[in-house]
View (cartoon, one colour):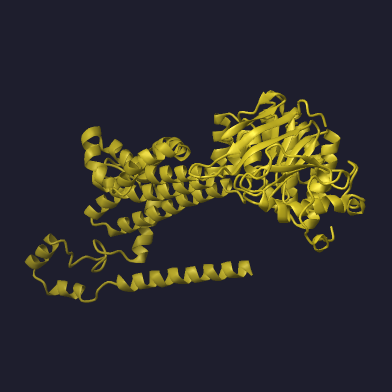
Length: 291
Length: 296
């Protein structure tokens, strides 16, 4: 039953993809009207059109070069990128792998710092009702702020665009982890804590051997949400600060009017985001227990 | 039983929850001798679990003192093992590691091999050797409760506290585990304090049955010394000549007398009773006893 269903689903997915590519192909067919018009133009008119960014006499067919790529052109671009993902020809021309590396490093660093702060603090908040109430107003106000709103402050105080990007990732990752950790720790079953109490377990052992494993599924859910948000935010942050990273790559290729590169980058962002999520899903599964 | 210095002594215990006009219970006095199996019976809300939690050190009483071995109980201790109502096993650990957690708490200096030997001994005692490396979720309710009992025994406590350990089990499983508990406690000469709602369970297991009047202001109204021989068994329990005398006495108390003794009308120093052996201290009000007879 199950394999049959999987096969059907895969077939349907493939069909949808084919349909999508078909529509794309149809939509980007070279427009028939533009080419013959070039013959009718005078030399000055052609020159003028070229100045406007149009290429009336272009051999590659009407919309091809600067406009939306056909699936075939896109495929060529993908092969080109994947063949040499790590080249570095100066600040505005780096391989996609290299750009991705910059983004992943920023996300990793910001996320790790956030985990370092959020998980111990969440533990403290979850264990102490006093701390919970005292910090709750701060969390409630700070949580809904778009991480990019911090960017000017970060740039002013840190005075380094790359570190500001990391800070933005930190600030957006910290809330879901903090809240989930606090919630997970606060809702550890009374019974397990009583067991630890009657066994005169030391506070450190209680934290690591009872509370942490009990709250781990909730904490990992928070980390998974955080990672999802961080990956969303890094693209926007890099578009703002520029320099390196996949977000900057998208913006740069938009400025180059290379839509094929933009589409490719979008695809890469999606795939990497999926892989990151998958990683956390695995980790989540590993710490989940059946009660 | 010697009344001089019992192993566990409860004096004038009372608990009033904040905002409540009347205490849940007060004037609780009783003692437990070493090696004695004591069951406490009473209606819901009379504070049985609170008393057990105070003995365990998990809750503070509003008044009164508890002494174990002439030392005051002031918090949780490894000297008192607790079997919780809902087994309270950690679902992310296997049976082996659940019990090892307790063993390592009691003897932090033990080597891994020593811990493992202790764990295996007590898992075998409750007959779960085959399931030692399973997670609690793979066990039935009865098996989980057995693990809970093994965990409490594995730290070799001076006293065992059981909070209605078989409440959630079906009758057949309950019977088997009762037999096991009886055997294990007899072998280890374990001192036990157990909460139950089941009259037959109390008669089977307990040497002494404490009857609590209803709350608020509940008290231990009577201390019933079980006149049945210690060699009693579940299979032949209802053939014991005194079985129905004890059973009727307990049921009468729970059905009619416990109500009339609430609000502090029960004595603070409860009388000892041996149903069927000594004449009852006060004739129970006429109740249709025959109607209460059920097949045990």
